[in-house]
Amino acid sequence: MYASCADQAHAALARVGSTSLEDLLLRKGLSVVPADAAASFGGTIVRARLELDRRARGGRIHLYMRSLRELEDAFGFFALVGPREGFVPAIVAHETFHALSPGCPPHLAEVAANLFATWLVDLPFYAGSADVVHVLYRQLTKLP
Image 1 (tube, rainbow, N blue to C red):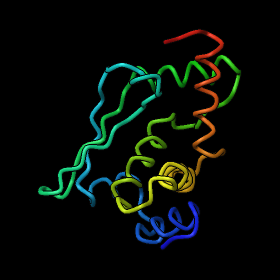
Image 2 (cartoon, rainbow, N blue to C red):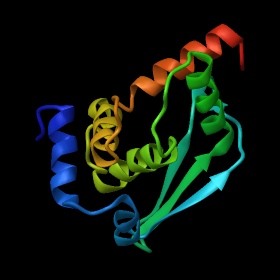
Image 3 (tube, rainbow, N blue to C red):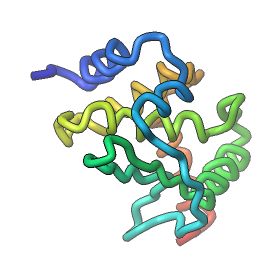
């Protein structure tokens, strides 16, 4: 059993090796599907959803583009600089962690996925900090 979120993320990175995110998606049989659905469900901000197909040994990562645009707006609102390549690679890497580590305990999974995304796509900040920026933006601008 893993002792920490960092252990989970490091173990996933070790399994992946030095592969690119694109190669990893191909290897895992994952496709990325943009969707223009609601930015939140029940008050929770959702930027992506992983849908695994165990029989086909692959799946889809649904990207909620409205949520991603809102996240970019949030970073702009606070005059923060986001990732050079945009947020999509980090969000996709986060969901890919869940595909790589389905046995990760729920209490570790989100933090571990954020660590994995931060390290895999070489973000200049912890991926989970984007959630704080997004929530503050919503509170200050009163978005639903």
